[in-house]
Length: 333
Image (cartoon, rainbow, N blue to C red):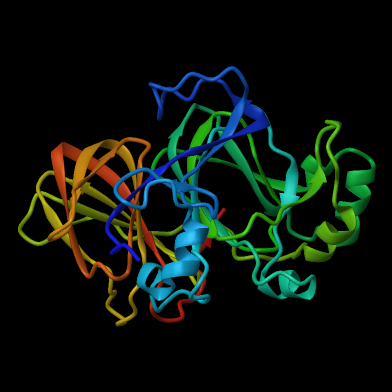
């Protein structure tokens, strides 16, 4: 098996009826004739774009390389643990819910789908709906769906660039038009569609209503202020620490060194997603990887130390699986 090295991922563009043909804020060189809703970066079927492993999918590499790729912190040593993607909503998404681990396992799935959204950009008035209004029951939601007024029972909140939103499994939610989001989630595509504004798509009311939680810990994440890293000009903004993932944002003006082992001693694959600027990912004895806006790089857990060298400046998210059990984050609506 070829030695693992920093992997540049090829984005997979997914058509959705609520998407847009204009992805130029993130991908100015790409032109589309159909509406694209999502750009998948680390899905099971996403492919490596560089080096000897070019063309291999993350699912194939996870199965072959195991914990050398995903790390000891991953729950399944042969499955890539986190799915990151850009979302480009140009119309309202369906009102939907993802199961938590317990509900997913009752239907034969390995785990649920808890996720978070980093707001990379947002037009004025951009909103998301997050959970049910206080006192709304599952039965009341079902009645509202039947009466085509489900939106009225949701918490609609304004969102702004730089915010992080936590979406625990079991949360009824949807997105309005206008933002560009970076989603980090458990590696699952299990979505139950509850309401779709009359669009001719299948609903999943039985499974979805069973997965709905009336009270959830979802909302805008309460975060510490950004801090300078040591004596450098670099800035760290902790975005979220949650049971399934940790996401931090870095803004680099000079080279910064990183490790694939966290402070708890657990090692994990690291996923970098550039949101502004450009940098070079470097590891000893390995070919460098360019990380420009919209790009994702996967750093295998077996690469213990790596660096990012900005080209003038680069801002990116770094996601990984925590090496210890973390509580749900503090949030507000």
